[in-house]
Image (cartoon, helix red, strand yellow):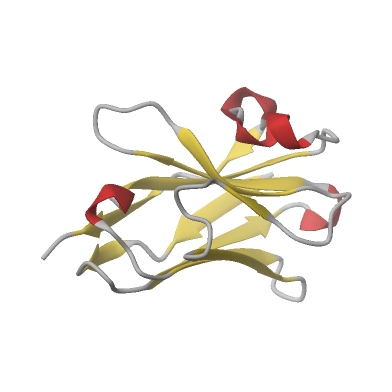
Length: 126
């Protein structure tokens, strides 16, 4: 199981970025998928979560309406489209997966996820 995250970079406030998380060695179909981030000096927090049992992703309140989860099954890749970025969105972003059938509250707990990508840095600054 390997996850490769990419797409981070430096963007001005109000700008957009799209993060990618490509899976290899397995297919994403039967996995819950989470996007997490960790800002300097802060704990890792959940940003978005797509469970196996639901048709749509869930979002943390801090990003709701600005971030969008999507997937391309043919490419075995998931994405996080981030719009209207703010300086407080600056962090290393990680994708993670688990085969566990999570309840929504568990989606935000990083210990529930078994495999992690390497992280990609997003810096929002003028």
